[in-house]
Length: 541
Ligand code: GLN
Image (cartoon, rainbow, N blue to C red; front, top):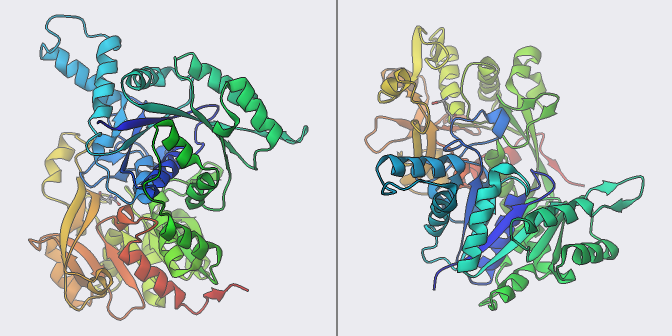
């Protein structure tokens, strides 16, 4: 028998956390002994998220096989504790591109290529591709009911549901109106009506709200949306997103879903997850981490999503170490204006990835501050490149050292294009052309990085065009910088560290993409342990 499909669609507002709902349902079904995978459908025309500006779109998630994807795939991996390939992300652009290519190759035998059935069939085929040996395929459809651009996907979802065992879950928002003192259900009723107009009747409605759902409101949603009261699942704001599977479990949501398919739990094992949530709630120490990056500020607001995998990786390590993390993001241009004194309150600093010049001098100042003051530092991708520049300038005395990304004519190009990238840039081939996905590295015996990973061969995900310029490696090493890991052919510097420092480690990779709630990333564990040893670190009273 093929897989069963669970379609998750949104109503009322975007940004409700459908990804967390999807991931949490997946986690519950996993805990009942079923094999689960998840697909994200993004109705935009882009082929992938690779060319999107971080401040507009949030983080770009990188898959093991080098996909540059919407960050929801990251949530799925963090919850489900499994790798998902790039084909688990479908965009309107991909669908139309394949249909148009097939048409150009006479693939429609002289007939018209049409939205119905050709676009719909392409969507269905792509969804079916991931069935494999999974018991359930969760399909999250981006956007909200009523959007023009997700209509074809809803159509395809309805068709798949006619052909396979499937259910539909509508995630909506209940606003709390202060003047009447109650959660309002009307937008939910309208969202359900819009969904019904596509031929889909929801089996469950998940209600997001800032507080718990009371009985009269539950009753109203049930009556007005034609579903059982038990099929209304509440999802109020939680302290941490990792609590959502437990919240759903309390409401027997997983078992109710199984019952719709005529199934029962094969086991019931959420043990480790529950223990980690308890760790988070009973943390007895607090650790303060500063994340200094280029993309923190967004108008008057602060961007929440742009470094999401980094923030989550810190939280995962903290849950395992039973400490409460206080994480603050600092726009790196602030360091240029206000100096590094504002960093003194942190137990450790992370410098995440980035592109382009703005704010890089602030980042370099930040790294200098960490190096000179023995403050734990973890540099990720651009963070490693900036650490090399800082070391070259201030320790090796290479005045004006820089990356050719920001200063093509720098006198000391300590960071330079990877050779194969030059031609691509000349041809303006920017989409999906970086060094992407998982690559192996060999770790040097006796280094901190090797000790943290506990093995010689590791694999981490990447997304970059530049690298440490091989011509400068000797000089950097002579002055005390240790390259603790390289590509297997030793040409590419993958990890660096400073031996006489509390914790000064950086990597060309993005280890945050391998961090899961149940399996934290070794470098983040090491970093947080070092932060715990900082003098300003406090015990929770
Ligand atoms: N801009 C740098 C490069 O392309 C770093 C990229 C990153 O931080 N992901 O190499």
